Amino acid sequence: MTANCPLILRLISSSVAVSHRAGQIVRDVMKKGDLGIVEKGKNDFQTEADRSAQMCIMASLHKQFPKVAIFGEEDLDPSTTGSVPKEWIETSSTEEVLQAKCPENLKAVKDEDICIWVDPLDGTAEYTQGLLDHVTVLIGVAVKGTAVGGVIYQPYYNYKAGPDAKLGRAIWGIVGIGSFGYDAAKAPEGQNIITTTRSHSNRAVVNAVEACEPSEVLRVGGAGHKVLLVLEGKAHGYVFASPGCKKWDTCAPEAVLHAVGGKLSDIHGNTLQYHPQVERRNNAGVLATPSVEAHTHYLSKIPEDVKEVLMP
Ligand SMILES: Nc1ncnc2c1ncn2[C@@H]1O[C@H](COP(=O)(O)O)[C@@H](O)[C@H]1OP(=O)(O)O
Ligand SMILES: [Mg+2]
Ligand SMILES: [Mg+2]
Ligand SMILES: [Mg+2]
Image (cartoon, rainbow, N blue to C red; front, side):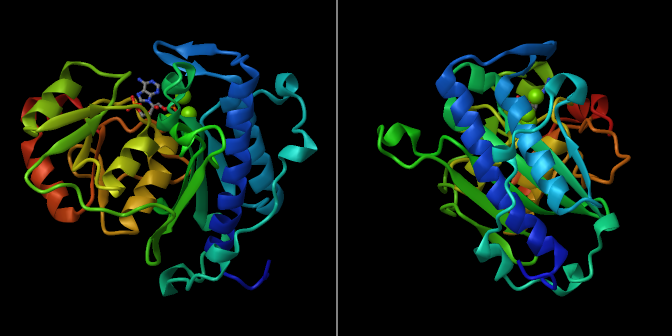
């Protein structure tokens, strides 16, 4: 790895490599069959895959970027988790990212400007229920509080293609460069497909979706998965009027979406912040669309009484 390559490229390059390793861990835990489920709160679970994948990602990135702040979803106590196995430390890089042309505004980014947000397994509820294509590994990179780079790794991409199919794909993006690793498409004209939660719904979530006048509603798991549906033209918008999503759920998907001209914000249209001290919870929900125009359209549809109770 070239030492004079801009930090942001080295970070995303390493994150892509680490995401493959973490995705392998997620698949291995499922294959063994003992998920080790812990209930963290109401309708909020953690499995052995969440714990192990987070240890892999945090240890691997920390080893290579010791001065960069990294936050993961899972609260892991080193006295009970023990040391990270050597084979989980992934320090390879992804040449495709290192070769990209760094945007001028990101060339001089320093360690202390950066905050990395790690969701080792997004869509845990669906993972435990066998809805494996809803699962993603998310690594988001923020610079001075703004999401600028991200990796969305889908460990079970292709799993319906048969036992010999190669599983998994890494999607990466950097604002000012673009996003790669998926099939970009426009959602079908004349339809209005909205994606939203399947496991964390409530009255406000339903009211907000209905107000968008969908022709179809895709209730699926994971923030990463839903932004992928928007990127691949399978949904026109992702609407979630509830406070359940946290910074690690949205940082990587936001960066990948923004890198191709899309927009992810809260349901008031406010930009989300990602500096180290920020409150973890996205209190005012999530609205993500493939374009700024679509974003303005859906924003105008969200009912005022839904907005009033979801304050940032
Ligand atoms: N009420 C909640 N409690 C815990 N996590 C939530 C909640 N709502 C959303 N999330 C997180 O946001 C992701 C997207 O939400 P949803 O799937 O409901 O649309 C979930 O997969 C989950 O991430 P995770 O699976 O990483 O814990
Ligand atoms: Mg969770
Ligand atoms: Mg998550
Ligand atoms: Mg998670």
